[in-house]
Image 1 (cartoon, rainbow, N blue to C red):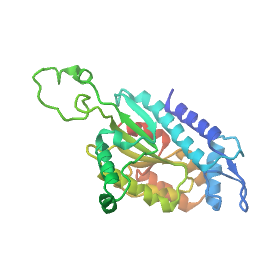
Image 2: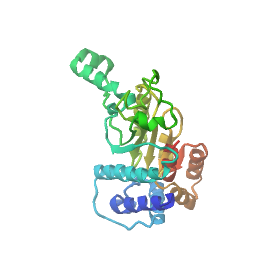
Image 3: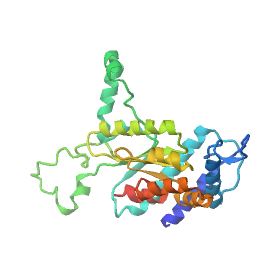
Image 4: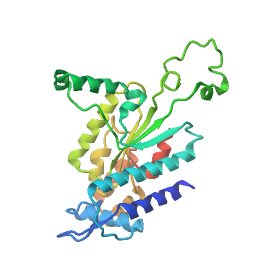
Length: 284
């Protein structure tokens, strides 16, 4: 199955399991990933929905359920696509949702910090913060046995006394290696974009070892709100849209110059990509 087929299957699940039509009081009905108070947002969302050929489902679906399903469906898509890239990024990977990052090699020390704070109110008040982080989607790579690593003889000599600390060797560390974190934002509220950046910066600062891929994916149709999360560097690797091709066409159809320009800046600036790009980028 090629990436276009996987992408289509991904959208079919989103259409059937997540996208619902809400009744608007003043601006008419609108898809549940649009801002019901914004004409532009509603137009873009309808444009995406029509291009995905989603049926109009008016069943009620609460926000928490939508968020959970977005995580699960996206995880399943990445797992399926990544299985076709084993020759590029070999290894045994686990794909999960809301897993404590302290279970991984780069962050195992956070368990000790969290436990110390629980036992000492003075430390907790001085440093604050919750060190037990459970990202939306977590991809971990299992450490490898020496037999797996030693295909070309790099560990074959019984007198080898080095490479005793690398987390790639299971004999050194049984903890999986955190390969990627995917933050799922069905929609984006501008005032919460900064919270996401703060969480990412904490992940960067608190690691011991290499930095995992840290990305976000969204269905937000309003380019200005996507820009609040996508623009800038130093935190997120990149932001991915669940249907970028369809979003670009929907915005261009409205001939909104500001929206078109905002998308061009993010795409040309390598800050916004399509969901189909995500598994390939994670294989780097």
